Amino acid sequence: MQVQTIQVSAGRTFNHPHEQYSNLRPSVTMTATLEPGEDVAAATKALQAQAEQLVEDHKQNLLKSLEDLFDLTERQRELVQLSAQLEAAQRRIEQIRKVRPELTGAMFAESHIPEKPEPKESEEFECPRCSNHHCGPSGLPGHLLCRDCGLSAVKSDFIPFEKERS
Image (tube, rainbow, N blue to C red; front, side, top):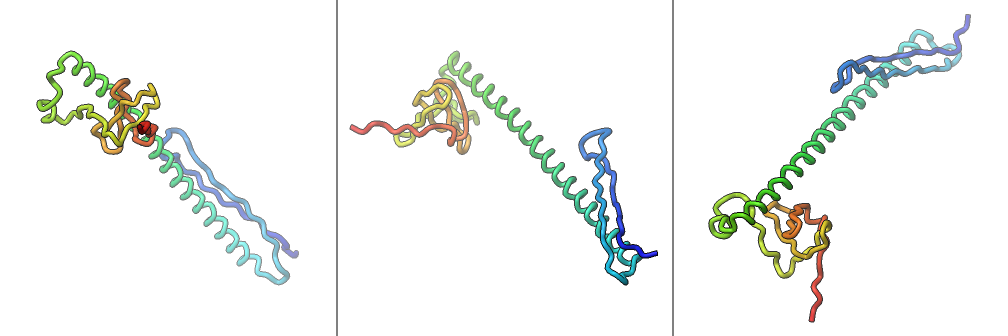
């Protein structure tokens, strides 16, 4: 009997790292054509090792991708929560300032809550929410605060406002 082709399969089943009752199973089937006089056992062993390595590499890539996706999702969820908390805190600061205006100024400088500073003459921005030009530093690095609607966002979200020169 002359063997002309060989076929091998390899697969791994492993648990999803972040989901219950979820398994992943990468697998591969490989076929090779033997040359005349080639050792069938050695060729089968080499092909099987190659298939096993492919499956293991794929498993490791899957695990890395799942970890990256999980981390990205968690960080995104955290940023949304922090942004909502920040906006709520800024609205509350505004409410307090309206009721107790004496809590601004020198007395306010001792606390860690940023006061809405006046924008620098050379740095005025248009608010993307209310289109007003009363925006200035928010007290957070790289962020601006609209003094009218209370929006606080990354400086790049605001539109630079060029004053007309007389």
